[in-house]
Every structure is written in C-alpha cells, then in structure tokens.
Picture 1 (cartoon, rainbow, N blue to C red):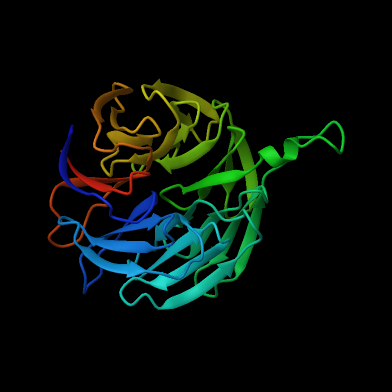
Picture 2 (cartoon, rainbow, N blue to C red; picture 1 turned 90 degrees about the vertical axis):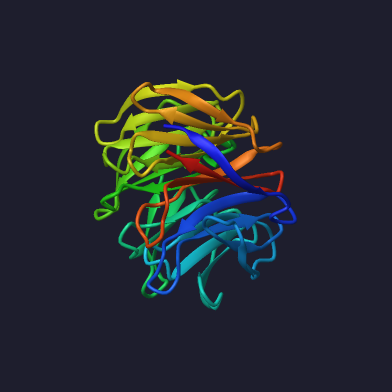
Length: 321
C-alpha cells in the first residue's frame, strides 16, 4: 500500500483550510470533495481534477468542520460563529441553520443511514444529536464531568468535546475531549457505555474501522494514534511517528490502513498489520488539519484517493493503491 501525490491546489482558500470530507455521488452528479476554511467559505471540488465547482458562503466566522450526508444531496458546515449550516450540495440553498451557544459547535458527522447529525458540543461537555428530518434535537449525550474538589476548581471546563465518530452500524457514537478521554455511547439508549483512556492531551479526531465496528482509531495532541476496542474498553495499540500533534485520522475503506495529518506538516500512511507508519508525505508547509479517504462506489470512480488540507491554504490529492 502506498500514496502517490496527484495534484495540489495552492491558495485553494484565502485562509487556513481546517476541514475536508467527500460528498457521495448522486444519480446526477459524481462524487465531490468538500473543504471548509477560516476564510468563512465552503468549497466543492471535482474529485480527480480538483477543479472548483462552487464556493458557498453563509458563515460570519471561520469554518471548523464539514460533514456530508450519505445520500450526497445535503451537507453541513460548522463554524466559529456557533452556527451549523445545512445546505443543498447542488444549489447551496440553506436547508437549516442550527444555532448553539458560543464555543459549542465543533466536529460533526452524519450517522451512516443519514437520520441523525451528531455535533461535538465543545464547552457544553456533550454531543447534540439532530434529527435530519425535522432538524430538531433528538437527544443530548452528556459527558460526566470530573468531580471538582471545590466550586472554584475549573476542571469541568476540560471536558470540552472536540470530535465525534459513528460506528459503521450506527449503534455507537464516540467523542473525544480536550482532556484526552474518549466516551463511547449506546445511541439508541442515550447511554454512556464507557470512557477510553490512553491519551493525555486533546483528542481532535476519531474514526471507526470500516470493517470492524469494534475498532476505533484516535489522534491526539500527544502525538500518538491509538487503536481501541470500543466494546471491550481496551487499548489495543498505540502508534507513534509524528513529531507533533495529530490533528486528523481517517481509515481507508478496505480497513487495511489509516492516514493521519499533523501539525508537523506531514501526512502519514499507517499499515495496520505492522502498526507502523510506512510512508510520510510532505506536500504541505504548515499544519495538516484534515485527511479524508474517498469512499468506495459511484460511477467512474478510479482507484483509491486521499485528500489533505492545511493551514498553508492548499488542498492536496493522492492516489492510494
């Protein structure tokens, strides 16, 4: 398995690019790459050429995260302006605007069937689950705050939720916090199952294995990429190689590899059998905030692809084989 650089777009945005995801193909349109930037815009790109299809505006501050509905018809962007904007991918028409108090909108992901949008609640120490039919809150999954020895103790603020990930079957939701803990919820019962330990700094990115719903990968500011058994509550392994924060992790659709982006300015490919980094890509000259493997399927889809975005304002595309 290896990555080969295909194309990079310099100055893809006017400011740092923090978020990227793939929008599935529809009957009328091929798959697209969606990026979000501190320049307050969301951009859509053709999958292989990285030709710009559209620039979407609608936020008053930088875009922190983007998510695509499995149908490919709608997508969402969350912003430092505390709004989540849900929009039609092909027309940019606003479907819904979800409002939250300041600093309570961070990472987000649609449930695999598309019925729920999970939004990491930042300082609210919770994850909000939005019904994608009515755009009302279905439930709030709260993280137990550590017991403070006295009211003046500020430890509760450390339960700041940054990242979320759905298991492939939609039964489990994991969220990562500023203090390094990961919580796993039974979504149907809105019940906290357990907390996973292993990191001691913020967990900015999480992804479940697409082939084994028990396996969860996490990337943290401690420089490590951890593999957890999300059902058995155990740390399966910890992989190191980055020289700084791990900002993003994504799993290859075949389940054999993961990719990471780091503030050490590199993208790394990890072989899960070897549990080691087997390749380092240095296309970017600043922090790599997001990496995203292209999902399988869709007409005309060629070999595997990985996208990465960075504080250097660029978007890079790699062939994965």
